[in-house]
Image 1 (cartoon, helix red, strand yellow):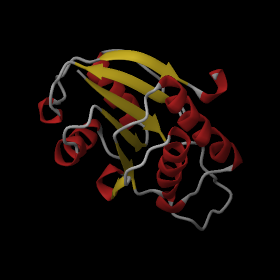
Image 2 (image 1 turned 90 degrees about the horizontal axis):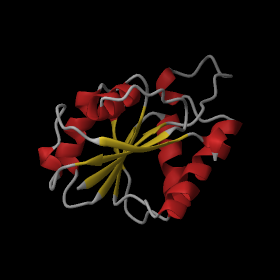
Image 3 (image 1 turned 60 degrees about the vertical axis):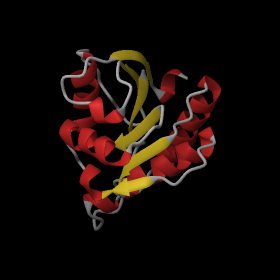
Image 4 (image 1 turned 60 degrees about the horizontal axis):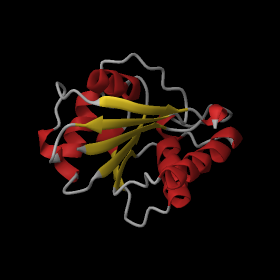
Amino acid sequence: MKTLLILRHAKSDWDNAQLSDHDRPLNKRGLREAPLMGDLLRAQGLAPDLILSSTAVRARQTAELVSEGCGYANEIIFSRDLYLAEPEGYLEAIHLMAGDEETVMVVGHNPGMEELVSGLTKESVTMTTANLAQVALPIEHWRELHEKTKGKLIQLWRPKEI
C-alpha cells in the first residue's frame, strides 16, 4: 500500500498584472495557509518521503513552506512538466522520479489536481487552493500506478476547516 498526497498550490497573488501566470507568487493568505498544511502533515504523521512540484512560483513556494512545516528533509524535485499538468503528467512524473518511498506528495494546479484525485478514487472532489488529499493506493511499487488504479480517498483537508 502506498500513499499519495495531492496538494493544490496555496492562494496566489494577482496584484502585478505584468507577471506571467507561471511567475505569480503566493499572496498573504497563501503564505499563511501553506505552512498550516505542513503542520497538519506533521501532526498526522504523514510527512512525505518525496515531494514533486510544478516550477510555477506559487507551487514552488507552497511546496517549500509545506516541506518546512512537516519536517521534510529531502530535496524537493521541481518539474516544468507539472506546470498546469493533466493527471497523466503527474502519473508520469511519479513513475520517473519515485522509488521505494511509501508516501509521495505532488504539488500542482487545477484542473489537474481535481482530475487526478477523481480519477484515482472515482470520487468527485473540489480542490480549492491549499487543499490536500490523502489517497491510499493498492500498489507495492510506484511503477504500478496508472490511470486505472483504484485508490481510496482517505481524507481531504481544507485550510479553513483546520
